[in-house]
Image 1 (tube, rainbow, N blue to C red):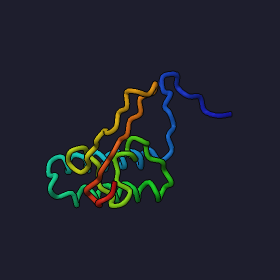
Image 2: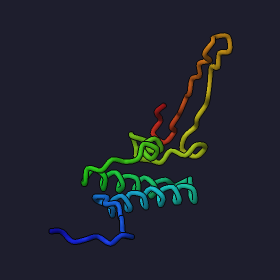
Image 3: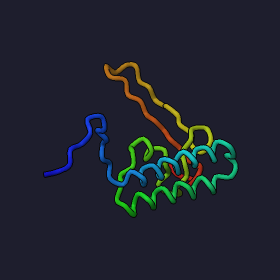
Image 4: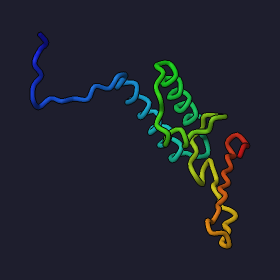
Length: 112
């Protein structure tokens, strides 16, 4: 016989909730530091590196939106206009389905 739960307390049980909260905080702190001082991204990179280590240690998966904003080479946060440039080239109108080429360049670690 188990204990009865209260009717109003249906909480979703998330394993490693504190780790997810810490990763979210580190991501937000990295974004805030980079937007405040874009000329010195070292602290932002440190926060991202720490966030990745927390996720690896507990085998947690990051949100795909967060993954897309991180550089895999140097752990810096990719913010358009600050640490990354995004261009759209080659729109063909003659074909029935227009094709579009996206070109992203990351000057943080000199890769595209």
